[in-house]
Length: 608
Image 1 (tube, rainbow, N blue to C red):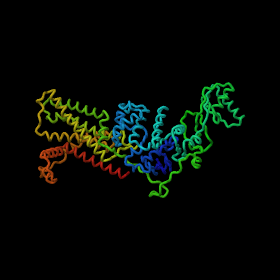
Image 2 (cartoon, helix red, strand yellow):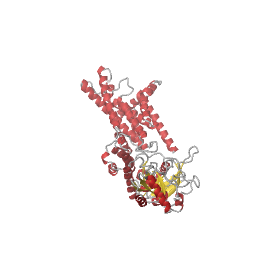
Image 3 (cartoon, one colour):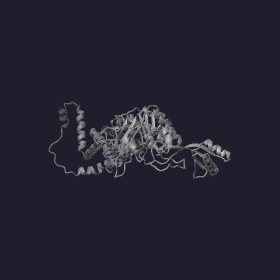
Image 4 (spheres, rainbow, N blue to C red):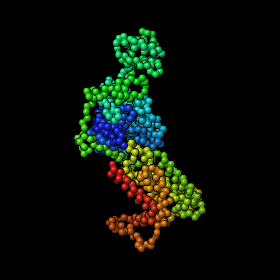
């Protein structure tokens, strides 16, 4: 069962809250419709329930608040707006990525593709899906964790009647399995057809809380739709016979002039009247019309256009609540709290949780789009071409030739490609926030950060190795094998080359995560050779009185460890890399970015 108690939005600039003291229930095994006209506060109520907006109140999901649920994806499935996914990612890739975030097996994605009717579209790109197929994918995303409760905001908006009927069938099937379903709509007819319980709101306040039978009886009005080429004559005849029989019948002529809406009669009576007077009838059908707009305290208003999307009605909704006309009963308020004896507890907008399997999630996010392979391919081709050009004059050192790093370029293609991939690691998260739909941010969890650092470092090392191999193969093919000889300081060169690519990848990643845009990550990568290296080179250099020679051995003695002597050579090589101007600049940049990232993360955690 879902219980919403005292939901109240935060006030902005003295305006009335979008949701004001809203209390209702969505029971187990039942589809509940939250009905209201556009702007009545339906979406704001859902966001308060999901702790996406600040305010007051509390929502219990089977007796627990959402922030106390260890795995929210297994308790609540949410559909708010469109699918939050990269448009070039495949449908199956999107679901498998979200499976890693929810901590469920990847096979769950294929199961849900069959369930929602997308089995044949698993390899289709998200950006090429129709609205109906995209809504099916969004429903599959909400069902990944097999949740008990489903919360959907206008799930049938813009859908064709056939797609809407299918989606409501899925919701009823979920409720039949014992789950709770809550969805919003502005169409009372849709609520009457598909829901078992209807909660009507207006201006953020509760208007009626009724079962669907009582809702249809007290809030909707039956009528007979008649279409005839002699509609005016038929209307006059029906009104005259109703007055003669002293029956309360009201006839409304539609704007087209050939269609009538008759209230207080039946299809049989209208058909008999038309037959007796020899009037042809082209349409004769029972329909349901709404009584009036929510908030209309005047007389009952009839609408002429039955095809327009009707709004919910007030009618005698308040009286139905007071007399128990289908209402679910009052929901008890929580006990007094620190906010005051009569105020519900505050709702704090909480940061999104990180993926339960961060490394698996990051791998599927990175390789689920073709951008990664494209960037790596461009870096390999550019490096091979540049290395061939650099080897022509014979004056460029072999390490620069293999790295494809001419003096004119601030960075070699491999380092820039690694930095771009690192920047996209966080940049795509903010542009397509699959982890935090509706929150507008990305979770700053340590596990997610470490996973991104590890995966980006692995990809950078792979790219660095492939570039060297591609350059060597190109040189051997063009100039023969005599040009390539193993340099004596190969270990130091390997460490420096690896450190450059990994450092650029991390600089792009941290900057994009800090400034929430990919361009900031790319700028941070380019700032290392363009700004930081000249700054380091201009620093005054004093004479060195002491040396760090023998540091690896002293570290080994201090830690009581007996690592191989080969490790000492690696440590010394790393120290030489850090002492180089580029290494020093990269180290300083990474240190500043790490401190800034941790500072903003801690500040955001304290704020929330």
